[in-house]
Image (cartoon, rainbow, N blue to C red):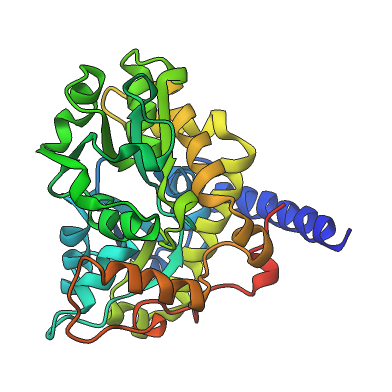
Length: 352
């Protein structure tokens, strides 16, 4: 009962916040506050082209939620997490949405700037083996003796050794077919490989769009087979965070409000994402968003503890699993990678 009351209160506050944002922006939804002297201009870099997984940020921008926090947020796009992290480290972007496991690897460099994550969007990494049941793969153990397609740059494949070890699979028994990420789904749909490593909300949805029957797809999520990894997270430039901590807190409040809107209004969220895409398909992005919400955002851990945070013990296990395919110079602790000091209280991050 208390949680329902908190959720109702949050929704009322969210509605009031959105209304206020529309008033101060002149009803345009541009996210600009009336007092230009108080606006903080920031750049948010995504590590890949826009898709429905970024809906909370699009909604926060479109609905004036960033503007209500006196922020003007501009979007930019990088070619992968390493580039997006580098932008934040250099100060070219104040924020970025990146794979937190790549941040762990980045911070192992001796001269790496102390960039940290301040909010986890994907409580579970979207890593998955997507296979064809018609090729005899129904569970992870069936991958032995099969051909697995993997892109060199794919972050999911970098945790494949840990996943295989966790499940007693001899990695050497699986033939790995290296390819470009651009042809991953076409090669599987053509039957040139038995399975591919990728992201569940990308590869699986794309394959169904290519005409592969849903009943022929086995989506083997790493999280269901002992992988402790978190997924996409917001990082911040350390100098910016030190100079403008309230701007960081406001940014996260707006993102949390955007997540609530995406969960409550997925159809409208998909429409707003597609409107910003070049050639986006509404039905495809709506399915993608629903997959992300169900599999990666609204996990049991989030329902218990709220949005955005980490469990330090779980994160320590995730770092250990990264270490099975990455030699650390000095293995980091959770506090080296994640800073929870900018998060709202847990009571304001709970979601029904």
